[in-house]
Image (cartoon, rainbow over all chains, first blue to last red):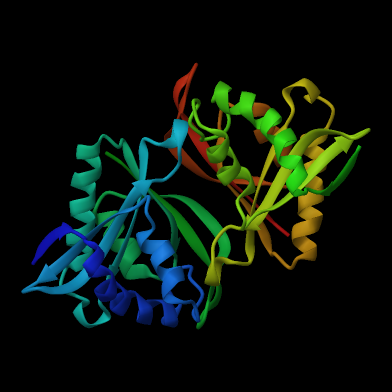
Length: 160
Length: 160
């Protein structure tokens, strides 16, 4: 598996990955019936830098990196990740996150913030904790989960 | 003083208020040398609803309201406020915040989240606490303050 910068030509592959995640509605705060344009604005809008994880030419996951705030807040990055449901358990999210930690540090960011980690997404929370992120905030019942109803969401942070 | 919906014609008045706040760089995460377009995208982009507080036809402050997230997160609002530096101490921020609490509740939102309250902005933190907001997260050294250097920023939240 290698991680490389995404190109314009990668979006259709990213859409194939993010569409079922969006329809499932359990991890990203995106409308379950949302359009491809909404997904693209969320994950691959112009202010974001995208990377893809691919194996033998097949895109298995992707990440984005951006500054989380402007001005006095622009030294903290914000990142997001998605993994093809068919490729779960292969360490792709871990590899993408480790890559973005290195990338953000090289870009001069001093920290990474995840703004909205759904608390019921326990594998993700545990993985981010292993990679050095801590829960710095709990947003009470901030996510309406299609199965569990209103559940907390976390703000997670890692100093670089 | 009355609070009313903003119109297209109000923006020049809002810009007069926000420009010195942006140049000062102590409370909003906006570039100190940023353009009017950046300020407008931050405070009055199309997905936001704006209100103005005016006294005798003079705009003294403004607010925005939007959904903080999409999809499963769209029941939580995000709001922002600005007060003309010349009109500080007259209860304008309090009135605008109280108004947006009522407005958000009427719109069916179940909570309001402030994503980035600079910790050194103590009058604002104290005011939001009086209006029912609690600090639910601390973002370590997430704001580069022009006088105090790196300082914490808070995530604040109020259930409706």
